[in-house]
Length: 327
View (cartoon, one colour):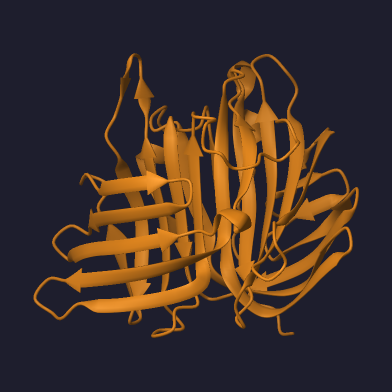
């Protein structure tokens, strides 16, 4: 497979967290173009105040025909940044064009490539340097192609040009409530994609309304969602209805549904010790309608090409929780 040109390094941020601590995540998800299967692989740093950083590796294989997702997590002391971007945790190295390693019953060796420019979700560069917002999301490769293999226990997926995303985020703490969406492999437009972060932030005793930031690429054009507008959101751990504006360019409407049997729930810890339950399905369905100003609406569908993640405080969702703490 021909390799794409080397990209500028995406530097790990955790060496600069200081005594206050923080968290960081490098992740990918890739979708089987034949439908019904996906890989979700995440390398994270958790650093409590005045403590050393701990690295964790999270891996999930989704298969709509095989029941519950197959998942594994391992936490390892002594993570370190790579000179060419990304980080190394234990035996696994997450780099600018691939990730390879192992942890317990799981192993992976994936290469990724793609010409799509990076996406920085926040609308201004200064927001990545300022104390607020406390979560800084970006996607070095919002639309990539993956090849290689991932194994968890007795289950192996072999990838050959699977579409997906490579993402990166960091911060002092998670949002009070958040949604992450990625859509790809649409029936009507194979090159279209959506990468969207939606969050509510706690400020003292108050929680802000929802704020959305990200982009939709459709018809060869990238449209940024307006972080200053207030999206309309109706969410459960397995479904989402959302409307958001893209400034004067138009309006996005979408519906996402995740089969409960194909949804994995993890515990996510903040540096201060508080915890969220996070439901993730990487083989969700999505119907998306883009209503450009002064033009006809465009509707896209994907049966298994969406990822839907909901981070929440409640533990009464009724879904089984993975038997791993964090970190």
